[in-house]
Length: 72
Image 1 (tube, rainbow, N blue to C red):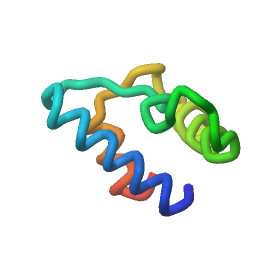
Image 2 (cartoon, rainbow, N blue to C red):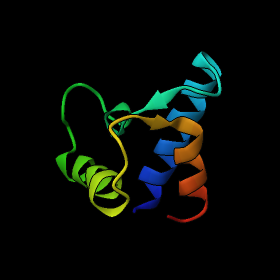
Image 3 (cartoon, one colour):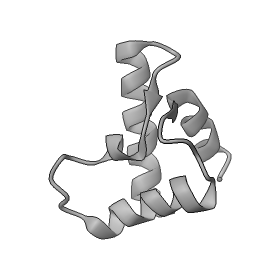
């Protein structure tokens, strides 16, 4: 996964936790605007989330941060 996407995921997850608490869930769509302006990046996130790690639609933001920081 490219560095910019990793940073964006951590930033969004951290913001969601700050807004809604430690147990907030996110989906990979949380990292993109409603308008799909970067389909290649969206597919990269979807592949990582769905194919590579077989995550549920919503996962705890803190779990996603831990996975990204661990290099998964």
